[in-house]
Length: 330
Image (cartoon, rainbow, N blue to C red; front, side, top):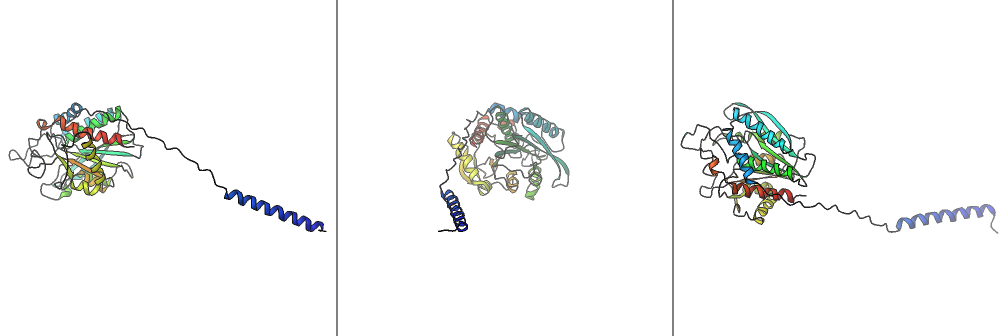
């Protein structure tokens, strides 16, 4: 016969063991897997790039006269570009800074930065320079006088402006920044490479937004000449080969492979994309290559760089390629 006290202790022990076994068995049962459905991002077809519109933006810049830093044409053109970008619904920042040129002159630069949906982390940067070199020093005639500079600067700006207009009309899934650098072309010919690209140098060291970044960037430089050839620029391949391949494949896929050559060429010592890469954004350069000379177009820093060499078909090839790239991003 079990005594009452011992019986009570035995019952308590049985209950305790049962609870432990129950808890253990619950812990070993397989848990139902929770499946979180993926949110499908709908692909938005790219709009048609309007080359007539881009051409008009190129001409508007040239009509101000040479946009030489410190000149009234430079100031009026800056106001025009900023106002036009704001009219497209872009958030516009004018980044101002003071820089010294190779000839010991002080200038106030204006980097014009326009953003579509600046709050989005996933974004693409399209950039160009909008200033004019003060002299046509590669020309044999009047090398000390200013020139229109229609392709060197304005062609890339014109494409960027048309992209901004299209983005406002048909919203892509990502953010887009149009950055127009100042003081790119006031460098010492044959001298220190760091005397060039003063606007992008300043931006790279003083980002307009703390910790700014983008998926990648594309620099447009001399992208409006008739029958232009754009090889894979060697610095771009070194710093951002995946971006080069993406852009060149897109161009080929939509029928512009005759403009975008599969060859890699080393002919750019310094350009704004170098400083964009140094700021942490993988950036490539779409820039015309002269196969005859192995360098820039024969209009480069000459009086012949005027509206007569701007070709709408080339503007279309570059602009449509970039729109296809932008609207394919998620």
